[in-house]
Image (cartoon, rainbow, N blue to C red; front, side, top):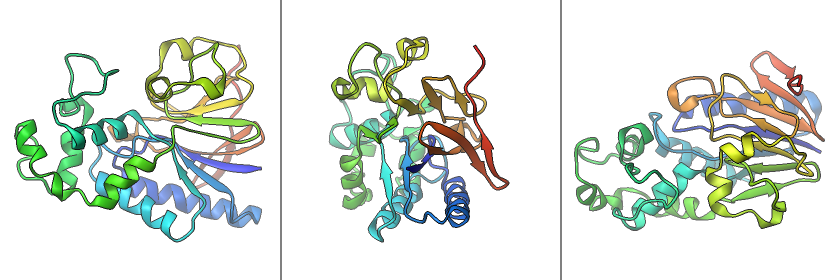
Length: 246
């Protein structure tokens, strides 16, 4: 079974379009137009066009593209803000809010045409929440916490080692870092994730990280999996991604 995966997008619509063009070319070469594409979450924040990213994904799904979308921590923070601007994600650092500049929430609101998005108070911004189309809010609600195939487990951030894949919590699937990153055990399936930016797609043997920092203007990464075999995909075609030595 062939599956494509795209790392953290963070409002980078042009990069997302290019990624899907590369996938279309690879599908044509392999004669597999119906292969699933998994988006690993964080569709919003930091980049210039979060609204455009959500609109693009919704449009593809609406016409029957085999696209599936995992929930990222930034997507959850956006949805929580729309419900109540004074309630923060419980896993977020206590000295941060979704509107804190490094997180990029205000960039998302700017893409929706909010007035004074970078200086307005939380209440002033929340009063403009009607600028977010209802179907975009529904999209945030239908995102999946994880996706499984025979050989692969897709989650935004990763998993908590020592717990069965079926027993993972949403908080861990969206936020985990340290315990997952340092654990060398095989998890039964190859875990494909993003959330923590790395310089390039990296295969650790038991997991593959595809977050290469698109939210900071670095490239958006696409990979293709056949069983547990993995290739990075770009305009030049495929490049094998082997596990790191040691």
